[in-house]
Image (cartoon, rainbow, N blue to C red):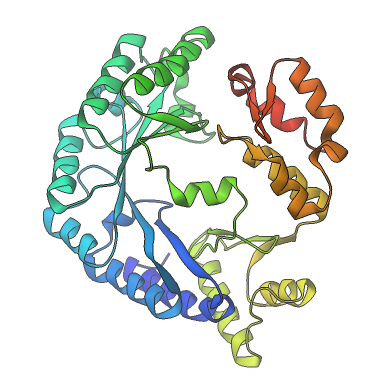
Length: 372
């Protein structure tokens, strides 16, 4: 495993190598995530931002987000973020209950989160997301309601609220028998409580797990759900460009080899710009070290359009489906739509299809219905 400075240098090299393929694009959002990027020094993060600005064309109002854990930033670091163009912060609180935080292995407490939040406001951040989690070990309806109330009192512009998923191999997964978790009914009540409390506090639900003040929806994440093009750079990063999906290697040594392959491929011949011929582009990606390169066929594109778009409360636009695929959504999914509507899971209005409240509750089953 290389050190942080070596990784940052590799990432800057990859940015410079990949950028020429996408100079016809205008970047509307950048998201520093996949770990704790706030641990990077100002010089390291600034160097990455410089590489991005040198290689890509950024929209004047580009949304630029950095994920951070409480206690990993200082007033000086936050002021630097503002200076270099970062205008959105995503803080991983998870819970305002210190006992709950300790049980899920978080090293911060609520006081540390408050200090980070206040430093961010003092630095000038006017767009902050707070991550919350429900169904935690020993969590009760009362403790979760306190968390929601305390966060709403701070009035962040955006709140992401997820239920805990026990990942195999994690300490919490291994030791789960040592804790009491909310049962299915209790977990469902926490889920409903989230929407009730946040709606009353002035947040609207625009995606299954995301709530925002008016005009503060996360632009970057909406690109994922609407199947826009996005380029992932760095360890394990995933991309979707012109209906081709791929990812970078997860391990440092493999990632370094990937960047070297990209260098050699670029030296042999100029990288094809997108859009280009699909076969030519796919071959170049594979030759330049990208993994799991998957050209999406028309059927796969339709499936993704439906099950990703239906994550949004506004659902999918029927005219957009027709425009992209040259066929009406009913011609492809008429029977499925009728069945889900008959079950009270799907509704149609204003040229859109969207999940009903009941459909949101069983969204995975609804999504699966659109897979051929």
